[in-house]
Length: 154
Image 1 (cartoon, rainbow, N blue to C red):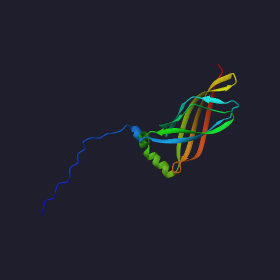
Image 2 (cartoon, rainbow, N blue to C red):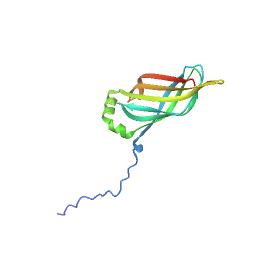
Image 3 (spheres, rainbow, N blue to C red):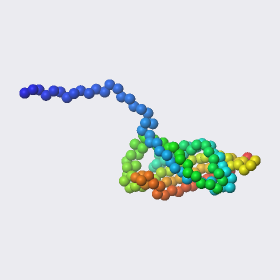
Image 4 (cartoon, one colour):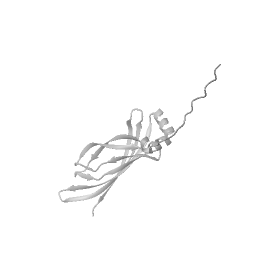
């Protein structure tokens, strides 16, 4: 009888780990924006903070822009979710997926200017949103928004 040959040896000679950004998830948030005011507005760039279970999960970027008076429009915001934070929350996320019920929070502060002819005033608005989504079909089931605006007279 022949002798059995030893199992082949494997040796890891190098291991390259890319930064956690390689684990991040990119997506686009579609936001329905309304300017109920009788004056058009211009606003600067801003960052939307996205949280899940009280932990910072990612951000979305709002480019500088403007919106006509008494108008609605859809904004498409590029977003990035932190892959490491998603991994830390995997058990909760999988549970939410199984229940088809996930709750997220988003917050943003936007600074801008409202102007009519020679009259212009700076403003800032803070928007806090609580969003319930069906993570299987990526549908918003329920959403509650709260906003607070400051108009600067000086």
